[in-house]
Length: 616
Image (cartoon, rainbow, N blue to C red; front, side, top):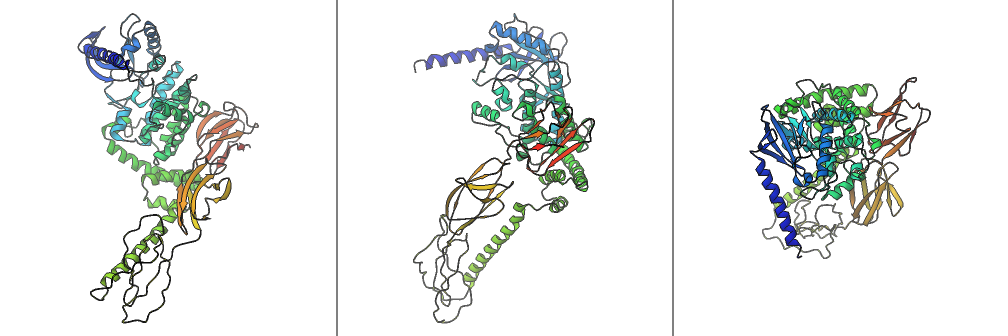
């Protein structure tokens, strides 16, 4: 406890020195650059707007924090990194004009000044972005990464905060090489890890050797964020986030954004494969896949109608035009796929249209001709039963209150043995419903038992003139449980198979811990408690198991492999094995193109079976 005071005082002095240094720079001159104003600050550096005193050109001055630039070794390494990236000249990479020398007391970089906003700012203001706009941004970032990778430079810290959108719509990727310079420092002023855990690749989180595929993973996380408005990996602290990154524990992008273009969803999932071998190999493959996303909806990136600048000028009008255009094109494409017998691909297109407009009757009619979704089909029936029950109860109550009868009815006689139908607290007793006309002085008749359907509340019997007293009957016997899932699976309890999700289960009343699993889905645990005679339904969303598909060795090594229209590489590059980390429940299409043979096609109508072998 005695050390806390001096330690805290030391931190106060440290931050005070930094604060004084920050405000002391404004109005001063750094080399040839006049410092005009502070425009931003992060864990690594403070950014100022400045002006070249000779050329009268606005620049950005990024000054690294003193604790990072205080050692000679760090300054030498910073200078080496700056020299490596100063030669990068690309439209979508922030240009570096100058940097401090080794002998300088401060480490700073002079770059072009960008009037605009970061991708984080854009999402904060507009929310999730349309698929086609995200594809355009991804193409520009992919081109920037590809250029840098060919120059032998990795980014290592690709995230929305490091991407600027200029006012004219130009995408600018910033901070190349800075993360590598900071690797040895490990902590920032706030004590957080250098870098952004939510956007790191698994190999970067494990401090393993990196290659270009690490940047491609980070690109996938950025696209995920843009199209969903949410981080792919979340947690209460960096350690939990990194654990999820390493284990690949995240939602599927289509779960968070059902309206996403299927091709873009596939591209993002491919980019974010946990194993580097499961991802795209080059940035060029990524830009080709994203270009195909635009081509599928007949959009050209250079068309002024759809360029990024048009969205910045009028995001609402842009989104409205895009929705109409996409709806028309995708509907026609879906119909064409149906005519060609490619029902699975057509369904993927129709699913997107229904996510955009769930009441689109034309699409609903087309889908209904292909299959009937049990979940949707059951809703109107269940609703109708409930509606009829409510009408019956209210009608009976109305008859009771409006009936003629004596002015002072006899007091209610409480039931001798009330029996609740469930554990839910019951309301105050209500009068029994009037089921017929009032008859004068009827002869007493024995009570007739009647089962009161669940879930209406239990009512106590009440003796009324001329009305039979109806006794409640407590439900008994086995309960029935129907588990509705997105994929068929078996149901187990303590290792014993009880049935499957296709048919209801008749179980004795009580509490159950059920395991739902199959060869193609990950195990799912369901806890449920059933009362006597209860009719229960539980809905679960099952996730497909990762799958490895073995390609027959008869395929030549130079055959090109494509999954769902996306080229993954040659058979030899893939090692005659195809990894599907997150199989799609709607199925996949595999194509192998060989120079001396016709195209080989294989279609899975459902999820890929783990360990499946495909051959000619």
